Length: 614
Image (cartoon, rainbow, N blue to C red; front, side, top):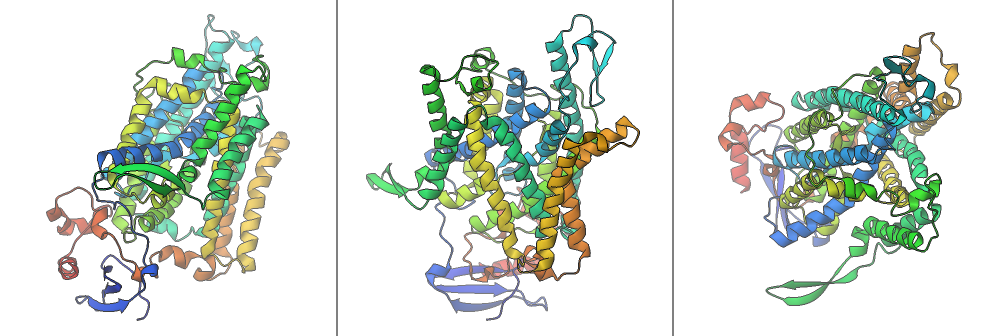
């Protein structure tokens, strides 16, 4: 049988080792059914629970906590980056507020995504793409968070180095001014995030995702996102330098369990009504490798603190390696903390941050689309139809708007780590992610919980970042498998984009006075843009990839546009109905739905075909 392209009216069913492949001829008539014999090993691994299956309560709770723990350290890392970029390092209460808002929004957006959005079990975690430009701006201006003593009460408004104005009065001291400075920066983050969230949402509601994919392929995406992972090494070093020994032990433990022992399984106890008490083999150490690494590093920090191996001098950088360095925040934190709009003040606007966030939004959209197809493959369902992708992108954009309103400082996006965990556990039920969203919402509301995670020793967090962001770089590079790496064209574009993306920000950091337009305002805008490695490398890669001659196969565009090609032998656990939103079925038959890009439309022909398949 020749190859065919899977579309919304194609499906497979399997009886024994005989698969019935139903295809739709080009003449639009009823599908032809052809039986072919395939070996069992050609079939994908069966899931323990499919997307629509109802999972037992205890199993759902256990798997939900497992999914939560996988991304918890990532949420903490991104919130820490935002606090650092907003000059709020000295204010644990602000850091706790940022983390609680981020957890609350991750839970809320995940619930919306599973309920009305993409409808597959995807977690909406903190998006690091939005903090990269913030960190770049901070590294560009070393005095960005410095307030001169002589200017404390010189004027009614204090002008700082980035052009922001802080209202002051005679009763303010340095600490008060630094707090106001942090609030002013967070207000800029809020306003810009709301605006790009509106654009993000409209991209999904209007169905313009397909238009973007015409110009952006793997050769554009890989250098752009890889520069993010490379740039994060600076923040990782900043966290790890407090104590490189603790950081190395944390990262080394995670690497040992996830890589060296990744193909091993360990015995785990279990009990069921039918079998009673029994043992089963499960890669527990691999699934929880990062968590175990954090616990080992945290324990090492506790031992060194008790034995006096770590300094008790707060002015020494090693002091942040102690487990009691920020323990006071737990006692001062409130039990219940409800995130609310404009918690740091009314949103403001900054042109440089807005453009940087806009670039991050485009990157986030394309990254999420790739995650959607990966999740469908792991869940053993057909590739997502357009209406599901559009609806998922729209929900992510709506989540960005809410993230701006609630003062997160960053948006949420689909987490690739959770998708990988689905394949390991074999549990792809939506029930699990409803519980995941609920747990994250509770974490965001209970202030004591977020405060506990703030107290994790800094080098322990740095060690976790080494393995997390190292894995991120590897996942990014895996997108090159659909690109011809024997093509000089592709290698030159990727290499040049990476070089320029690293070179231009370094030039501005080393020689900030070289860029001088004569206007400090425009200088700040240009520097805010050019210091962003994603922007410099991404735009160059996109320009070269669309102007240098090359075939679609060579560029990897064909594989992206036809992600389901070759899936005709797959025994799907469920059909395309798994993507349908919770709306009356009669609505999907209305001709109005044909013109709404984020809702499914079921024509009479589709109804006949579905009946034929069943």
